[in-house]
Length: 173
Image 1 (cartoon, rainbow, N blue to C red):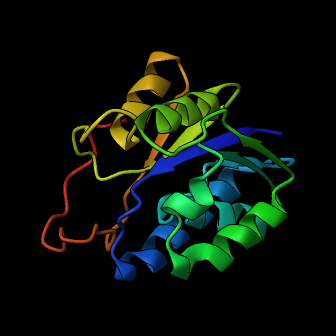
Image 2: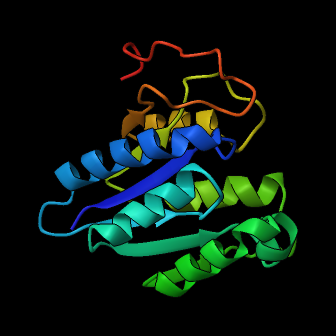
């Protein structure tokens, strides 16, 4: 049973949900084989869409929560019900040993995310790192560790504020 981890943008535009979820569903259907374990930090956006698709395909969900206060400090009120439902649906959950959410907690969670992963799905526009612990850094760490990376950025995938930008990703993988 392959373990597929996810990293991706939290700030996906609302109209990106359909195309991103469809692309994730297609990729995960191809990868599931005799079963599927999806590993996610359950952040809004890409992580949540990935977790929902893993569960929709009958896969196991493994959650990695960056800090003890993550739910209260980071999850927006509008996303609490979805976050709680995904936590309840997870077959296992690891809460990283950080009291407070922040860069160190995110970096540690991303490191844990990659441990034992067979592949990394990156819902990523190909942009440069915007700070340590983000999507680009996780992709670089996976590649350095020899973990195969599948970049998902379908037509219609946009980030909030980037509605005019659609980069070419053919050279990424």
